Length: 129
Length: 355
Image (cartoon, rainbow over all chains, first blue to last red; front, top):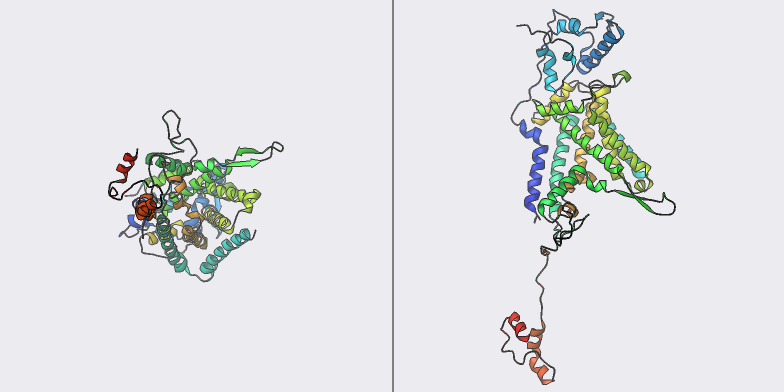
């Protein structure tokens, strides 16, 4: 098989393959680490304000709705699906169980390079030693 | 028209295959592991095969399309980029073509708007939509690398921050949150405008085939499912990254709790990758190998010999005279040389003697 300008074309192909397969060769031989969530002890609370699958995928929507309700409309009471009432508050409700930003929030946010803007207003809770 | 409908149906069937396969038959390993690997292998093998196949075609002569004055006499102003004479100028011309789509920027249209007179005017929409579409697609593609790299490079996080710098969301209308990434919207906008262009302009519609419609619908569907997953249905991205990292590290896993929406999105992307090398989308490779762009216009300064020229058997007049000299002299026909004795002398020397 005769290639015309073979040198240039093979070089181009190699560059293309190296760029496009970067995720494969850059993590070669490494096991994929997964986020290690530290959930609150069952003694603190048995369940979150709503179902876990919903919280996993949509907690940001819930937090945003709470923020809007509290800051803009002055509403502070969240009625959960099971009828329980919660104070809509990141610091007083969420963080009272999930007390470590590092071990809870950051695990997945860093895993996916997500930069939520919660902490632009809220104080980061002090890590318990 | 048939191509248009066929393409819509084809994309809908693809969506249906993924929905039935994952939702109905629960074939998560097939759609989450086997199909993606098969699509990637097809993509890479197809790209390499196509490029090598092209490079087997000789390009014996210089056929660049030039858009400016060729390099000639020193007092004639030349256009270095649009009529490149050297490799460096070709490189510059190619870079501008690939990065800024200059040939699309030259697009003209012909109309009769000023009465019966033909008018040529510039037509920049194709260029604009193409720039929007391609750059948005590039950013979206790069942003997706966050699912395949652990830890995520700082540069990717920075790109995401720039892409979402408006920090707005559409939560008020039930869409949105996480922050809207502009590239996704521009991508979907660009592909819709390119699609509209094909539908609205009659001449373009007339020359559009299924192979033109299908990629547009496929990419629209990919963009829609992606945007839907991020802003509307909101899927569990942590388990999606676990799946993606499993693929990237060759330790495939199929985590529970991954939404069927994701499999639809992934399946359409797999189809796009597998379809890529064998379709018009292969202009990704083709733009680098266009002889009308990547050749220097140096036919007047460099001799280009056709590689498949074969040695032509010749029989010139001197040899003819040698064959028939005596007969020619006998018949009174004038000859250039009286005897064959001088024959071994070099033709150049003979020529000088005659002068």
